Length: 432
Image 1 (tube, rainbow, N blue to C red):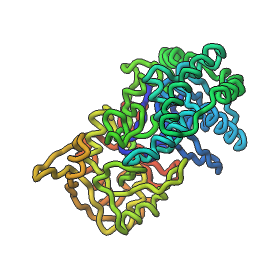
Image 2 (image 1 turned 90 degrees about the vertical axis):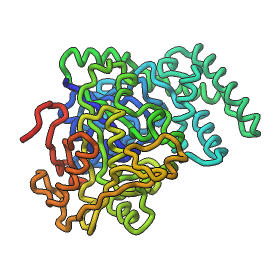
Image 3 (image 1 turned 180 degrees about the vertical axis):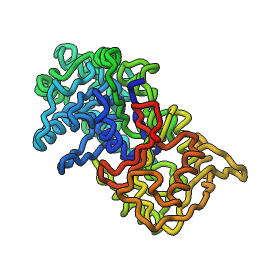
Image 4 (image 1 turned 45 degrees about the vertical axis):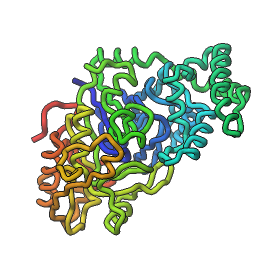
């Protein structure tokens, strides 16, 4: 199969952008299929730093990009991102980007809702406050606006009025400031001529590309453990993040998705609230944060850090159908005297091999660790698995054994080319 789906196998921020950037050189099309501008990727190409949130990463490499119907699209955020790319010399036009006509729109009222809901929660979730969740709520509630509505002003006005009336009733009930339909409508009419040239039946384009034998790379945002069904609910995102979402979020049938590549760091991080069983709040956790520069691309928020949870990884592999793993930031573990790997949990005196769904059970669960010798010789710049320190090789082998799938790629520094490729996900034959 000529296609590859990239998914985060932890709680996001695994380095998917780096992996997608490497794979994009082998792809013809790169498609986003979920999330919105609440997740960011940073790419360094030719000495320039590109910070992307909505645009598919492959555009930086000259590939055609698609924003699928599963994406929650803030048109103002997209246009601002396109303008930033132009300042860096990258022109984004309808020739290299298409947007699904049935993608959900994120509006100013969604941002207002997001902020109010987070403020009123008894236990904040840690949302990015960008309106993504409320936009998906409107989508499921069948009152949302879609990108294609921008081409039909009269219908857009009617739908927007119904949407604003619905949410303003909630704002009034809480004594909060209401939103203006007219102001939003006027802004959307200003934006429409800039967005509509990109709008196409993206599902048909992707199916046609597959029929021509082209390689499609599906770029996921967030990660399996933030999936609305399979993540640590309610501390999750508002969309599906497992590999099957690539089919629902683009319109290319599930049987055509191809190889599923899960991306995981050699340790673990999480942003915001929610369970994190291997979290380290001591000097070791701070060392991981400092060495890994663990701060959000879009938000700047410091990430929580801890040891790699291979039991959680195994769960992600199973529910998302992951075929192989890309292990990133191995160099961050350089210099530790010892490294720990979670291989299961102890819950109420019994050993369990998966993360329970209940928040209370997650709070009672304790990680079961295996300890490994660290390595003092740096792995930075190493590009062959055999050249890694023996301790690093032993650690990787155990990750593979517990997760149940092979590691196909390993990154050993922030440099794009410092990547050990054991198997090209676009090529079914392993490298010797």
